[in-house]
Length: 78
Image 1: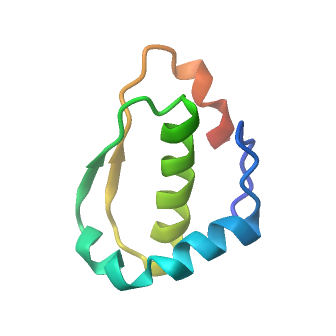
Image 2: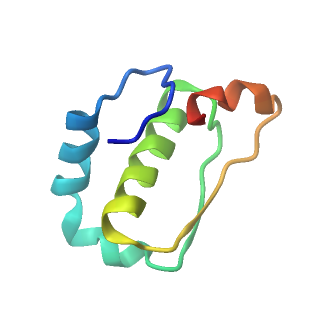
């Protein structure tokens, strides 16, 4: 389980389900750079949390790039 303060309240079971249901496409992201715009918003923060879970499950070694105007809003990643 990823221990992060989430503004969208994805719990470990939700994140595991996302990881399990997308397992067939995980290899498409190996060593990739993934740009997520709006990383502090509802959908962007959800995508970041999901990719971090997939990254930890599959050891993809991908980079998540999320440019933001207010870095303090990324506190859900702590």
